[in-house]
Image (cartoon, rainbow, N blue to C red):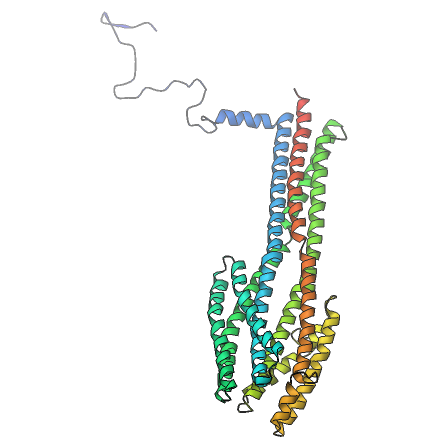
Length: 471
């Protein structure tokens, strides 16, 4: 614009008043900085949104979703199967054997107590096999303590109890040997020492062993529950993935009028096989684990309980003779334990309960043990009648006598032998049922991962072929 003159002098062009910011000219983009939808990332995002609305963009988006879902399914299915395989391996190789070792440790100590009392009563007539049985019981306990410690891993509570038992066992053995030495001298103090040794075992050693057994039984239950868990997350993801693949193939058919997409069909088949494998493997593993529990774990627990209570009743029977009726505590213990053992068949902890629904492999042994248990009870009742009449020697002969098979001791030993063989049969049933579960689940984990990878590859190929048509 031409400059205007004022009094012959060129006037300055009009401009902003002093101290005032000039008005901004229009931005080249047509909008000021910081306006909504503008910024350094707005252009790329706008281009992505625009591309996603195109047919190739929709294909890429669907392919990304399907691939992500296939990867998530594969990882979840493989992880859950591998986790269950590890729990099943732990169940078969550590927790069940350790739980059984803890129960056997308790039983060995209880049997040592009963056998020590029997040998004490026989005094110089004690046969070598009775002495050997007592020594074998102590040797078994001494062997199981470090063996259980080696298997316990990071179980601090189990390690502590095993350390206490390793200190308590020699003390008990020393008390028994002191009682035997005094008894050989013909002094009545030997009986007091033996009763003290038994009292120490019953009130200190055995409760410690019972807590150890309870700890390991809880660990066994935890491993069993983990191994038998249902892989719901993998199954739900697999069904969703299979449904998404099927739905997208229907959409492609409607748009392209092409019936088959080889890549997506391969992906669908891989997911279907993975699902069927997972369901079938889960059912097979559950069946094996259920058999391991019903034919092995639960029957062994009930049998161990009966054997231990029978041994404690047998100990009370013998210690009552050692005390020569000086205390009613042993008769009361016998009565209490016998009431539990003679309970209803509906009670799994009773002798009759063991044979109510016996495991297939141990049924005959348990029935024979029940017969001998009943004979033991009858012979004990006959000895109790002699004891009530004041015939101590007759009571002793009726209860135990070397070389005779018509005593209460002989009947108890016969029942115990049958229970021991039944326990071996139940342990074999557990090993057979649980032995291969971990391997099958491990194979299932690998198969799920490979089939998921095949599904990813099929999805990429199927989507890629459709994208190629737009180039």
